[in-house]
Image 1 (cartoon, helix red, strand yellow):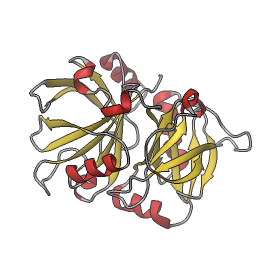
Image 2: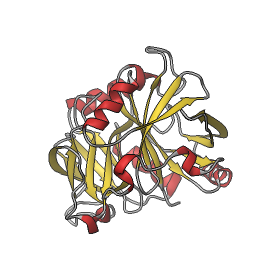
Image 3: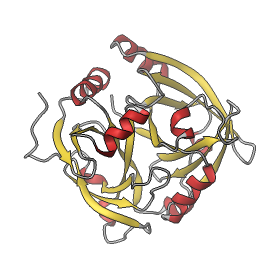
Length: 294
C-alpha cells in the first residue's frame, strides 16, 4: 500500500496561540471551522501537494474532547497523522484481514467559516488515540478542495507538503512489526539522533521514522505523558527550487535518518522545534552505514 500523507495534527489548549505560532514562523494559517462533534475546531496550514497541518483545540477551553483529549488539554503538540486512500472500504477490509484492529469507516463533517459543509469518511487503526502510531485512513465525500487548499503563499512556495512523520515509540522492534504487518513496509534501517536522544528506524517505502529513547531524556518523558505518537513532522522542499529558499524562520540545523534537516522556529506548545524542512527528493535515501533491523 502506498502511504500518502493526507495531514498531520498539532493539538493545544488555545487554537489562536497555535495559529499565531505558525504564522510567526512564516506558515500562513486559515481557520477551518468546527467539527460536527460540537467540541473541537481547527485551522489549516495547506500545502501545494494537497497535504496539510491541522491545528486543533476545543472551542471551550478545558472541555473534554472525543479526539486527542490529553494532547489538547496538556498542550501535547504533534499527536496524529492520516493517510489518504481512494477506496476506504476496500483498504479497511484488507487491513482487517491482516489482523490489524479496524474501526470504520464512519462519516464525519465540519462546517467552514463560510458555511460550506465538508464531509469525509474515517477508519481508525490499532488501539488508543486515532493516528497515534498507525495512521488513520481518510477519504473525501465532498470535493477535496472544500477540505483543504494551499494557504496564503504556500501555493507557490518551494515547500511541497508533509514529507515524513517522526513517531516516538517505546519499542522499536514492535512498532516496526506493526508497519510491516499493516503496510508491507519492509525491514527498516537503523540510525540515531542526538536531537531526539533516540535510536531511529526508517523505511524505504513508508514516510515514517520511528524513534525510541536511548536512556531517559525528553522523549522518554513525553512517552510517559502521552504514550506512543508523533513527536515531529518533516516538510519536503522541492530540490529544484534549492536556490529559492522558503520564507520561514529557521531555529537550528541537524540530521535525522540520514537526511539534513532545518528545524523551524515553531516551539509552541511543546517548548522545542517539531517542524523540520528536508529535501523532498531524499525521503527514500538511506545511509549505507546504517544496519538493517534484525
